[in-house]
Amino acid sequence: MSTIDPTQAVIASVLSLPLDQRLVVFGAIQTSLADPGLDHGPEESVGEVSKAWRDEIARRLAELDSGAAEAVPAEEAERLMRGDG
Image: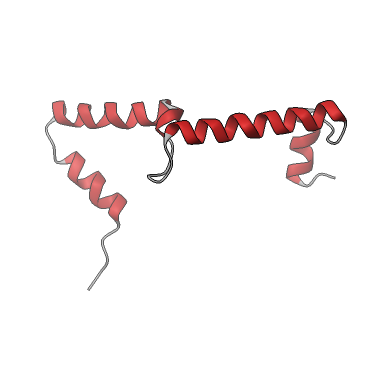
């Protein structure tokens, strides 16, 4: 017995809908991708996620202000991530 990929099942289901209904689905997906407030797990509210990010940003800014952390130019960070030394 083969396992059906849930993503492919959803895609097939949506593609079987009439155009007007596919547009509704498209709009909902587009909204969810464009609104970072919708990007959270079921256990965390948008407010909890937003507060966690504000706290993290404040912590990182404090580290920069105190000298505990040092900013790196974007070009250098990209070079380091690529492993260009």
